[in-house]
Image (cartoon, rainbow, N blue to C red; front, side, top):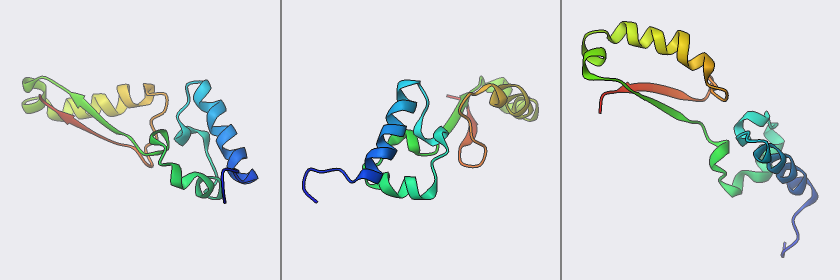
Length: 95
């Protein structure tokens, strides 16, 4: 294969680079399975799912857990620009 990048891979890389330049993670670019296949060997972190951990105080964690969970789901998650409920996960912690 040498140093030459295949045309299909180059096209996907250009698409990802354009998205990254706009501040968009690769996972938000809605790449097709074929496009993902072409760049799978690169291990792009912005193509991987995200784990969101919400740090809450001990009282909210122990006493108001259900209210806190509902608030996160109804108020916070919808505001996350690149949250994808089909691939990303979230949890609450008290640290």
